[in-house]
Image (cartoon, one colour):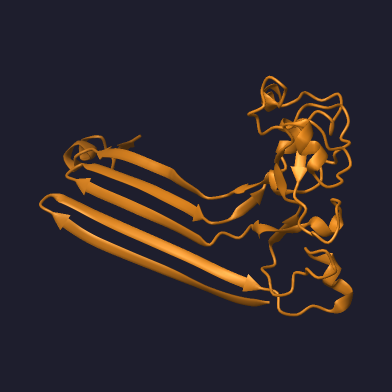
Length: 234
């Protein structure tokens, strides 16, 4: 594999009157690419083993079918290529390989990479006399994730006898055609458990990890209490 990346950090300390502060930001990112594999193990990695292999792509690439919405009308069902199990409220899979008129193994394609493009964070702290304040933010940008939890929350055919997720209450029905969750079915004739873009979601987020406000007692008070320092914080 070829791996290339960078890390960058910038910190600034300053003060304005009795207020002192620190701001520290960091950002990092990397790219990787599989450049060589023995022929006998290529098929152990993502790809179809024919014309699409992991070679030349990131190691953590996602490969599967493209979920192209749900069938809404009989006309949509009839006009779509041969797809075993297709019907109202079922996931419609995209015919990526247009050399034939059916959905098969060759219709899988690249659905993204789980590695984020960037990871960054921001630390801020300031103090004023006995008071102090700090917060920490961090973020992931650009990655994709395989949300396998949807198999438990969106379907009833995969795990019979289980308690189902509340999202199944919003599943497609003739009266609820705007739903993106397939119609409930006791059987998975449409093979919707197969890996597809239905399960792929953005992993990007910006999160406030920590925020703290504190107050330290004066040294004279601490001395009377036989303490070196006392700090209260929320």
